[in-house]
Length: 291
Image 1 (cartoon, rainbow, N blue to C red):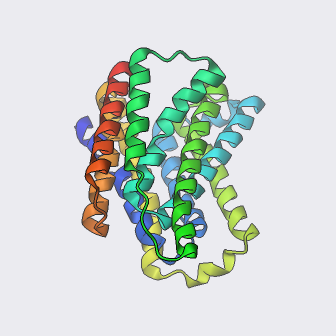
Image 2 (cartoon, one colour; image 1 turned 135 degrees about the vertical axis):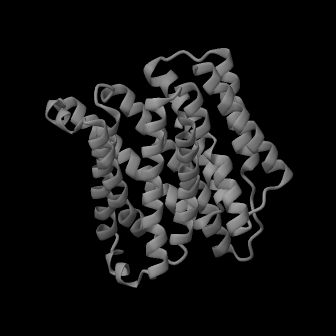
């Protein structure tokens, strides 16, 4: 049964980007992030209740609170950049770059924390990095303004990966003693505050009234999908083998790209397919190495 939960985790994670893309056709990505975050927060709160760790919040030290807030800010920045990248670019190009945060995390852990990189892990890093590079393809756009706008998705996607990597490093440094679900709930609370402050600071609050009902539904569903993925992942890890659960969850990139093909008609070139194969191979080898 736990294998089904692991598959469900990957399916929901893969669906998140698709649902978000459907919800930000006309809606500003920052506003969409602010709307979906309360849904994610509710789901993370359910996870805390299931884990029974809500009472541990009183024992969190001031130092840990600082790192929780910092990691929450990094998470919020990653989400804001990720959904902006999704709004401007193709899913099958944005998602691989976002997933490359694994590589950045390993490199930062080596530089900041002094964690060693084995030869096998080094090979995995190279495979994922080369695969990501192969999946980045430039489109020929007409007009300088359109070209500038379309090209900016890459910058947002890169920042999304960088902030995601920083989230992991901050967590490794100062919040390892906090139960993971409780830490997730606290970080999500910080993201919620950050997202809404950004909405009001940028004067985008007025656009809340003009959100199409259909897009609002997709935005909320993307939040539900994120929370459902977390719930399935937690259940699978609790009942099953981590060496099996984690690889299944990480391969959600395949599900996302498959969805993007059938729903949005986003096709991969032979070069991009080769890149996807390298990313998947690098991910599996890395997880086998960890296992």
